[in-house]
Length: 200
Length: 200
Image (cartoon, rainbow over all chains, first blue to last red; front, side):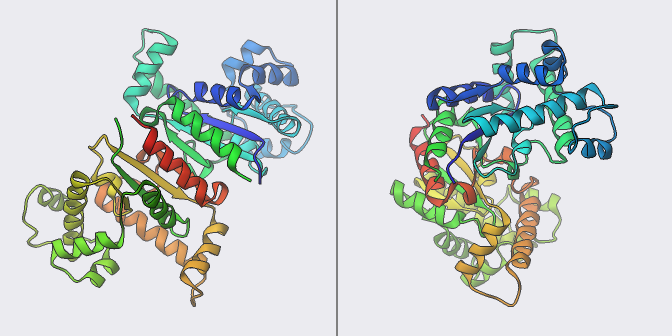
């Protein structure tokens, strides 16, 4: 089946963000990263900066009850993190219905798992490449890039596990997984763009 | 760095064998699967059919002692499975020195891990696709394709873990991991051929 949506999941510092943006540009389709935060903020009624900051923290609320509420329209009694996830789930499903687009992270591969027109990709890279890129992209900080990388990795894993029950970075979740430190950013973009166009 | 070698690891029934063969054909470079068994048999002094049959069974010999012997020329006192692995290790390292080639499985991604000119790929697929393909490719058998798939998966995992200490199918081991059930065999071939040519 021809593809309409691309999800890009990535390790922090792998350049997945840049890959996703370039893929959308090359294909001339919408790119959802910051624009997704705006939509989630609007849907949840929460402040945009707050949504951005809290988006990768899993809540500690009851998973069973959370599962139930995902099938209803009520969000009463749930943590802010859960409310953000519920809004995120609705916004991503709506977007996928409405338009061809590239969506960065936010469990979008899992949220859209029942669609056959969604190409799920994952960008990873070796630790040295990531550490260098973190300093280049996000600047020097008091913490070492290795420490920042470790914290971010652990947070993403916990968040993904909490809301999807799956393991982040398990290749079974993705149709294409690429090591940007060996392939380079441009080759990753080419591979995803061509696959999106070629799958019938 | 430009690539010289491609390793193709794969889930049973994913079509990884076909992908590897087509990649070698398209690039006009050698393909090592059966020819590798012949070389391993010659190197180990064991019978070819025996090498083929025993190749995915891990031995139960002492891993620490095995680690030591890998750095010496002696194979005395080790199980047949270990002797096969030692021969495989030598043959694969020699091949990679001598010629551009595609190598199917046999822990080749791990054996060649120190080379910068080796593109490691992994082909996986969803279970229905694999079950259908197993029957098409290997014929009907008294055991269900699901049972054959499960046994083969477990054997490959155990073998890979025993000899490499790594987890089979962990995306960190591969530069490109592809789901052939969504991408199709030809798209997998295109992606690997283009990446091999384009990496500088």
